[in-house]
Length: 294
Image 1 (spheres, rainbow, N blue to C red):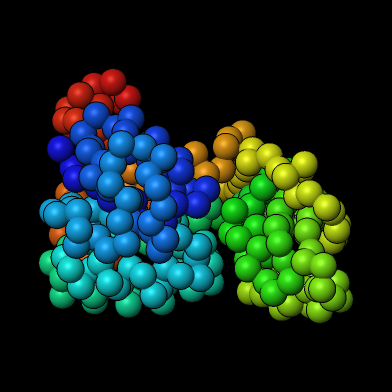
Image 2 (cartoon, rainbow, N blue to C red):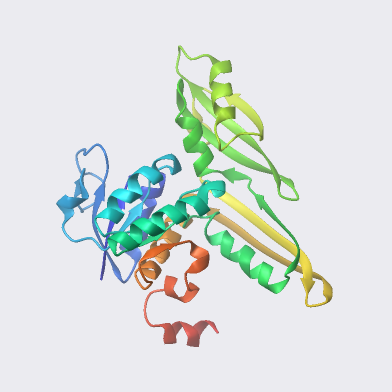
């Protein structure tokens, strides 16, 4: 059994508990979070320091993207394999390079950006690219809740709560609808300027809606439509389409669990989901899956 710990207990962490418990080859050893409150979450220990949990094979890093680069090195230095759902696509290559060195030094593995997209949908894009090397791929997100954008908006000064919804415009273009609940003393213009300056939102079309209750609009459902039109060999007009209608944090945590078992089968170093054999994301023997899925 793979001994797993969950780091962070927000939206992703809650669903990661379920995903690990449902895995036939994993045992949930505990949850690490900053504030240890009365354990009414589940039957496993909740601690502030992973050292209090004993031997751990893999840590699922369920913290906001902004904290991943700070937290992952702590676990790699202890020789604990990590899987994160880092969502800043422009930084993945540099983060992977840094974690690769740290993981090799610690004799363990690190999987970077094992979320929904980047993550699972990246595999779909790669397969489409292989099927039609020349062409154009469009990824249309939503309508639905974006976890990374929501967390970024929530973190701003003067914000009590926030929700970022992604609305597809078409051909890979999107706009954001950000619902915000303000503190009584907050200045709306300052909050909007702060959100627009965040790397998650910069240069994007955003509509802000002020509300007394973000909870009234909360729906964790999301959808992704990925389309590629291109050329196979010398044959034009090849068309591929992949659609998902999902609960965002539930699928993210499930992909992290799959990447955790796959990571432990690799040599020390850092990986993205594109570098992991897909069959290694599945529990059990390879031969069983080859017979069932081929």
